[in-house]
Length: 398
Image 1 (cartoon, rainbow, N blue to C red):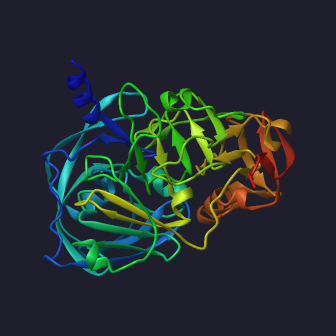
Image 2: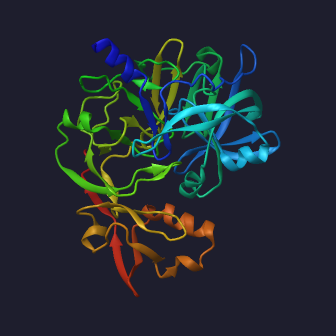
Image 3: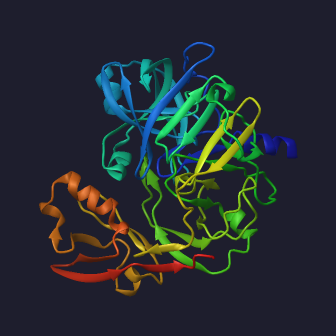
């Protein structure tokens, strides 16, 4: 009975944060990409504003694509699939953020080019990726998942490169580092569970998540998170968003090391759909994955690991009608009277409606990089302006 339950758990559905959910494991209709030769090395230039993004060519069509170690399968935007004239070859199971199951069409891309190197016969789920483009402030044509990111993998966010190779030897020697065993299945980048639960809950090393750490409710229940803040937000992505706001807990990680890595003090969102180490942590390390040996190695780089939370306490949806979709209680925003769902009409006196779409998106995306800001909030027929200053919401440990 327990063995069957564990097997069902390991075949359960896993979420790509802010994007959607796909079956843990590559669907039989999804073809693994044909990588070049037996001794290949592909160096892919990447940028990392909100997500880890590479420029990819689909035939003659250049597009931006997310590099996502948390995705079992690759995804193609529905508009791009139509432009390329790709026929559906089957379907793959997906599940939205409200637990509704569905099937998504699957196509096979004859060739895409990563880092100047052609990768052939790539199976991809077809979904609407407009919400990712809104968050990144650029058009996103695809998500590159683990049916492409095979073999040996190195992610160097600070160096602006992702490297794919036939073996770790092909990646070259890199001395030192913290090496730990990865958790099966080997086609995903998983660390062993950090707490003991009835069902194993490994930690996803997820370049598709812009967060630092997320933790499921069952993991949080077995931790002693100490002081925490209430967070009101939404879950959503390629399937749209939840109809109602959801409640999360925000706290500084005080649990055991994750994969041997001491992340004490790193901001954590509790109550999420999976336990992950996201891009907010991975910016501070070079990550190397040896799937054959089931090993993960991390080297610190020159980017300091972000600890504590220094913020206004809100985030704004960069849509045509921008609204507050992330609000932390006890933050400068909540204390100034900002409410979840408020419509934002201006930033520092500049009306968002008069800004060019790209400029508006960047102003909203990079809001929390400012030290102070004035927001105009639409309350009925009137506009109320609030002035906010950043401050530490959770302490940064020494």
